[in-house]
Length: 257
Image (cartoon, rainbow, N blue to C red; front, side, top):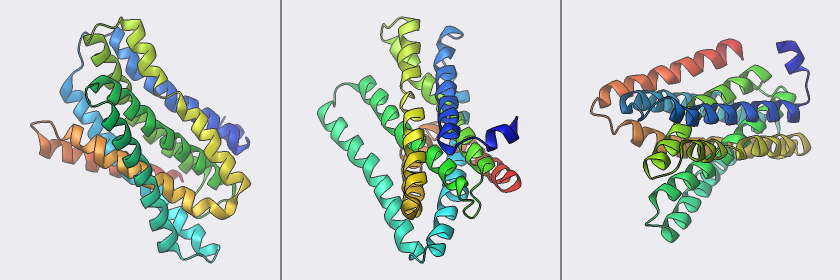
């Protein structure tokens, strides 16, 4: 089964992985049918693990291959990768600021759009990783790209719940809350295809695309995941879960990549 997947076109691989991350978001949203309210402690643990996974993925699956590829292309690695990371962070920063300024009194709408916006670069990161694996750059392999998709999928699970439960609490039916929560990640398979297409068709921009995706993921981690998880009274426990998430992803990426 794995060998079959490895032999697929990278664009098809990205689509399948993107659909997987979308599906995990839908599973998180589906929790609305099982529970009346979400366990805040469990959510904080999931968010902390997700933050560690995202941080690890950003380096091992995106920044490190970007640096190696830039060297092979005789491009100054630290300049091009720094530029890509800044661009990824700035894109989400500007999107957040523009939307918040226009909708300061619509908290739930802000949450939905914020998560949807963040899902787009996450989907691109998956597609870019599969595109990079096509060229066997550095540590970029189909397995490492899959590990990245799994990491993003894990952090998508609480995001689905984070949308559905507030909507249900504010008068939406369970089904409607589920649909809206699930569809917040529908951009991921689309973005995954786009990311893979860009890399496959224009290998020269691969270093900046990889670092751009890393910057976007770092922004999501620092602005969304870590502050949310640290809202817990047991901050020191959440910090440990973050480290555990980082180590788990590092082991999977290095050992299987």
